[in-house]
Image 1: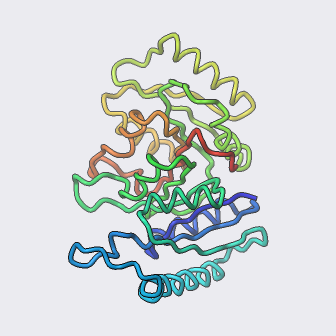
Image 2: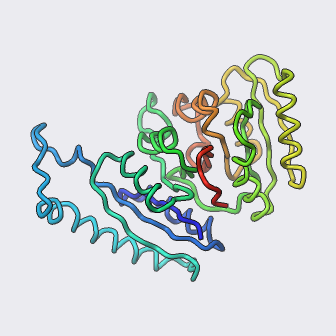
Length: 286
């Protein structure tokens, strides 16, 4: 049984992520935990923290949240896809957002977080919303980032951008191999070098390790040269109609170039292609 965390702010964006998760794990035994965090910074008046009287918080914040979560459950029940192996639970917490996520991940033994990403509204905005970026970088749990315009489709082609610096345990890639096996997907391992595509000795060794690891899968290597990593990924994803991008969070510098430092006018695939970000200290969920 997999435990999936679905943070929600009751927006259509978060609802889209919930729908994606239900479709993605359609034939899996899953507990889905829909969590709404009432933030501590909302419990402030005129820069003065309110006295967190249990009764006041319950009446003013918690009860209305529970009503909204029940309405969300009803909305889930009306989806065309229904699985007897899916069980849904609602959670409410009031704390700092990341603290609540971390606590829930530990207490509920969460295998994967599925969360919507909000599109940036200004050209200087980061691509991923702050909440999603914080979860990816600060919570050691595999995370699906579902763009607001993404619709679930079978991941026929999965892109795996890598710099071939495999300091992580290869078992970290097990969710990728499981996705490939479950959906009969093709894996495209993409290396982007800012100068020239030649690999050094360590990179060549790690490339061979990937070849061994995915030996039974449908995979191929693709080598691109571009001064801007994010531009190269975008071109690759668009040219091949990629359905899912998987990345390892430990390669954070490489990873951040693709997710966090791109200007909106240069990026289009972020609006409809989901990301799966893998963390080392996370039990297998696939």
